[in-house]
Length: 268
Image (tube, rainbow, N blue to C red; front, side, top):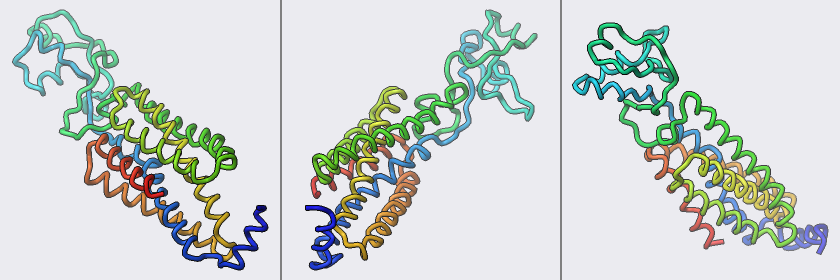
């Protein structure tokens, strides 16, 4: 049946009847999870103080206080604060010589970083997204955008071929599965790969939902459906803000934002 014929039928039975209202409710609820995955990384990479791991000096000075250790092994910047990405090069001297003559040669952190503040686990602290590795944060978000692009290229034509509902279900399942998988990744490169799949699923959900709404809702009521989708997206952002405030562990936050999609999956 051509779309023009469906439009005529909708004029007869009503543009926005009970069926269309329930359709809007069940198809726009996933927009809440879309908002979560779109912006969750912003709350998982909170900036915290850090400095190079200089525990090498404890081999010759095991009784040094933390302040003495940092003062001997870390250079200071123009503001008088410890450098976050540089350290004094380790030497084979004894502690008395180090304290008497000091260290001058600097190099980049060779043994990782230390995060002094008592912070819950975040993407930054677990995968050391600092100094030379800080660009990985932006790269991960770019790869997520690549996923959005790939999803639009794959799920758009696929929904025309096999139907809107199957594509919505496939996209929701992938989003939930790989969203939960992100919470257990051991390496940041695996995280980026999973985020790419989540991005593709987000495209599948948003594109198919909007197409379904415009096909089954009359012309006069389509703005209501579009407005409702934007409202759900905004509500999803507010829920994300509340979750990130209450759940500081990034892995638990990812689980809290990804698991509920399966409830919607079995309802649709």
